[in-house]
Length: 206
Image 1 (spheres, rainbow, N blue to C red):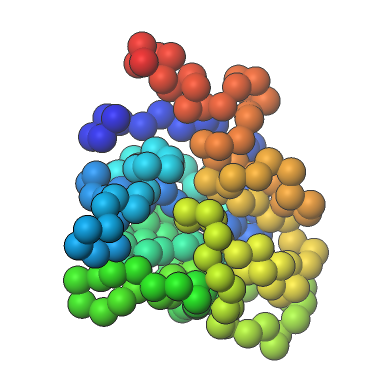
Image 2: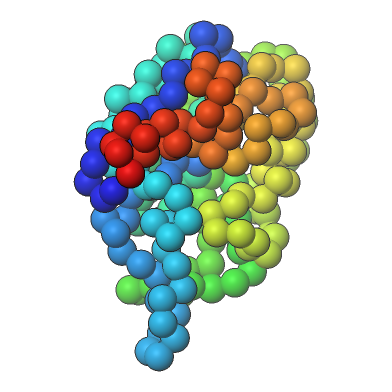
């Protein structure tokens, strides 16, 4: 499926003050190795469909963003430039790094051993009001679990910061998250009563 144009399910007809996204970044088919003799240890394409930047850009995320809203977006280190471009393409201005996740495990890298992942934050209009907690820590130290699954603690801290705002998680893995709407490849969508990857594979005849 590498290089094939991706079809997305419809975005909700709602507006949100907090949008939390974990895009399935495209690694051009690159797999992950732990060193000589270790064999293939996975990589994104072993676990889910990856999406090219242009397909992500064409998602009309700005249509579900409130006039005053924040976008929290996960970005792997090789995709930091793409993440900033994507946030801007979705109608947000780059703000800062919201969270740094110490995975407590290391992966090999071309330069240094990879151990952390960043959750960036972008702003549209003003910071949503009313505000909640203003003393939320940036560093989250939690051992990595399933491939690409992010720590629940980050979502909990966002809830502390903005407890009363309407929130949605994009590219979600879990459909039932208290206090959040969800949208993504791995959850059912009422518009189709099936996951969109099933629909996509059927359309492709695979």
